[in-house]
Length: 570
Image 1 (cartoon, rainbow, N blue to C red):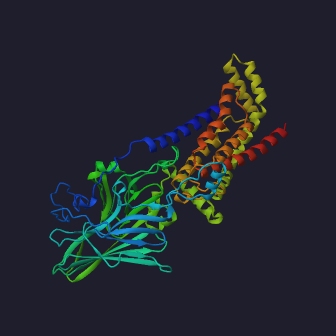
Image 2: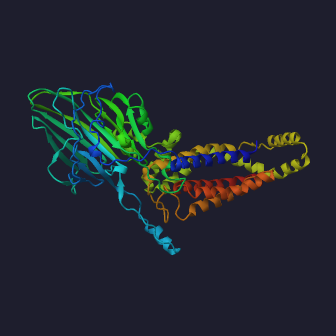
Image 3: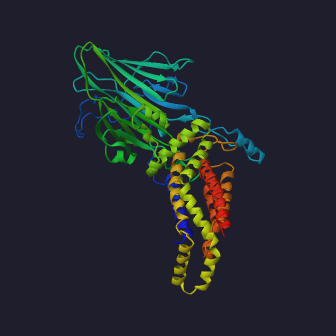
């Protein structure tokens, strides 16, 4: 078998796969953009969870009767909240969380080094959007909000849902210096003895919000109902960057985690086709996107019911409701749930809820991607720089594969040594291909040359390369993470294309250490490889190109030593 031909097929397949995935991100089918005039005056029953399994029932149990749409609440009737990591608004209509900004994650990072270098070469400084990433959003075209409330059982006094109007004590809340937590209470009453205090609790340095819904029953009879929490959004994708890196195949849609099915994606098309209807102890429901996630987490000890809905105007809902709870007259009870809304940092998410870290998706190569991320994290804890962590991982992978690459380089060094004799055989048996193949295999056997030796390291490198590709594209820690000098974001392409050029040079050097193909056509194709790969690597994340540069450099050192050693044995 010809090693070069095999290498060409593998490389071509990898490039085609990356191009196809990038094409799907940029040009593949996308959900229709929502057209919402005013969500506050939409059908106020359709976006509440149905607490029965009978979809055709005219008035499901627990579904409040509404005779007319509620008037839109004034845009100024909101409470603003700011901690050290998030800033958000709570709408007094329903106590809905909206316009949540992640203060430590700007949309684009200001890179003074790159701008200075651009000026040196006569280019204008690149304009950046320094606004923080907005996760929840109240604008119609980017609608994404977190709703919650109670649903009363049939025959009970109506309960406050996300259409009810609350009152507040202050217009704004801010976490003060030295303060560890912040409490924001909202109140509601029906003036007939039923009252609720809806309390949001924020903690310093945390993306987790605790919601306590305390209901007091002084109606003169028992009251029964459930709590629910849900996320409502419209599909929205903002394509940025080049064709190969925009979006990076990141999943954008719903996710549920249950005891039976564990982690399960429910995309928007699935919500159109069928409503989710499943019960499970604990669990959670989320909407996730590239780098960030939002998840409602009901109490782990209760049997929660998870659901999805496709509403008009292309709005999608995913959430859960609790078992019914009866509150005796002149007593009170408290419903508790938690909302996580922030970056998908796995060590943090593991502490929030079981399986929440699975929202970081490394595709079918998760079994390789997870150990790579773990190793990167460990090395970063010592170096404090993700670029050096990548270099450290490259050394570890190279060490792990050392026996295999050692055998491969020895085989290629011996192949290079017998190359003149192979050419002589080719000329002697130019008209007798079967005889040439037999003589060539006899020579391989005699000289202890394995023609497959050069293929095995490539076979192992490809899944590692692809896994690192997903780790770099899915791990939020690499977003805007600097390395050195002009490399100020490891997750995007090198702005000055220096690393890809260095990669092409190292590939050319390494190619010169390998035995050239006997076939002149293959030899010409092989000479084009460094240039072709350099062009493709121009668009890859700088962190991935750094890995390949370091890997090539280590291979050159190892292969040079082995080649000299084999030649010295002549």
